[in-house]
Length: 513
Ligand SMILES: Cc1cc2nc3c(=O)[nH]c(=O)nc-3n(C[C@H](O)[C@H](O)[C@H](O)COP(=O)(O)OP(=O)(O)OC[C@H]3O[C@@H](n4cnc5c(N)ncnc54)[C@H](O)[C@@H]3O)c2cc1C
Ligand code: FES
Image (cartoon, rainbow, N blue to C red):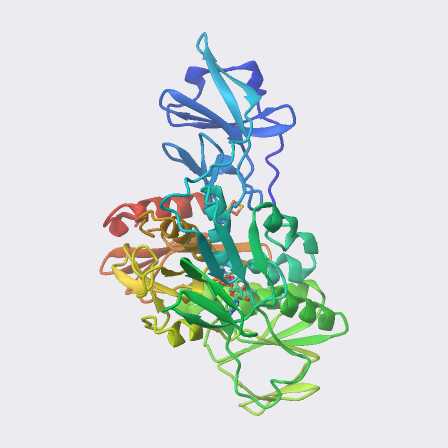
């Protein structure tokens, strides 16, 4: 997925009349072959790359604030002054150009050099930080620690065999065969050595000794920490069914899982997907792209109804049916053998490949055995610190006090995990940054992206603006008149605007509703 804001606008080196750009405006232009976004904030002008460094989203269709610009696709945020990727999911900066105002015109001049690496004074900073987990939160934390100039020892322990990967891609483009494998790692392997991040793969942490401030690995070795980040994520739920252990039955969490599904798909004619969740249905779409017949078995009346409501659920079902997916809803699997899946209703479906996407469970065993406070996840405070001082938690395992809903929530979203990793990094360095990002996730089905901002586990009113069938809509989930969340299809600007409004204190009621 990438957009090419091809460098076809005005040549910004030739000058633009100052008053040709509104005081809070943006203009897409070019410098040589580079697409460049010229942004005006009152009397100040900024010039940054126009293409988001996450998946190439068109920043000219995003929203600029006083000192930052947000991407319309997945809400990454960049500094206008330095181009720095302030908030995930973008992890790399935008290029920046210097700007000169002269004779009523504004000219974009030379490209700015990258800002020199920051160096944090050793005094006051911890000497050793250990991160358990090499996923979204763990990676984002490690990167942010080095960006902030942390110079101490930084150890990342992961029981995966692959360095941190772009996990959402594993059910989308990579699984569909439309993205090459080099898109999957978040960074090349050389990055970790260059940044002084001691990434230890296949390193399973067995327990945490909070008294001695050490983590203990499977082999009995110990790693001491001054600050610890737990970012162990979640693991797929395994259905207690006969046949789940067969080699053609898969779950999807890791690159290893994904490669195994791709290998099996190469010799399969028909797949059965268990579960009509986001991951299950993204897998269904990707296997259709590989030419397999796909059947989906799920207990729900409609796919995704619990999260998106019945109207979007019906739309998602219709979309997959248009692409040839066969649903067996209000049905559950009873057993699996080498050739078929038997349903509790008595029917059987032939299957050469079975993928179970029936939900995940947060990996809290380490936190539990260490005596950290738990409540359907690891409890953290507004700074993402657990009940044990110096031990932080982020990502799928963390339940945090969400200032927008006033509730303690835990979500399983990529962008939230990365942003929590970034905030936890600052707080491990002694800052006091409240984690106050509005939750956001996206899901992709064929050519239809669904963006969701906010958090609405329950709602008493659902307001649809636009036309779901025409793939042009914003659906607002409200409780007591207050907008808790907004789901959009091809209304990226509206999704971003809702995020900005939800960030305002007590502003849910206004979020465009
Ligand atoms: C296929 C797929 C597609 C997805 N698509 C989307 C999407 O489109 N949008 C979205 O918002 N979210 C999506 N998600 C969810 C998103 O990926 C997760 O919310 C996110 O990865 C959570 O990040 P995390 O850092 O908490 O955990 P993870 O990314 O799962 O990382 C956990 C890490 O901890 C390691 N670990 C666990 N236990 C131990 C231990 N004892 N010792 C050492 N290491 C350990 C693991 O090996 C792993 O490296 C998707 C998830 C999957 C699986
Ligand atoms: S493309 Fe910009 S945030 Fe994903």
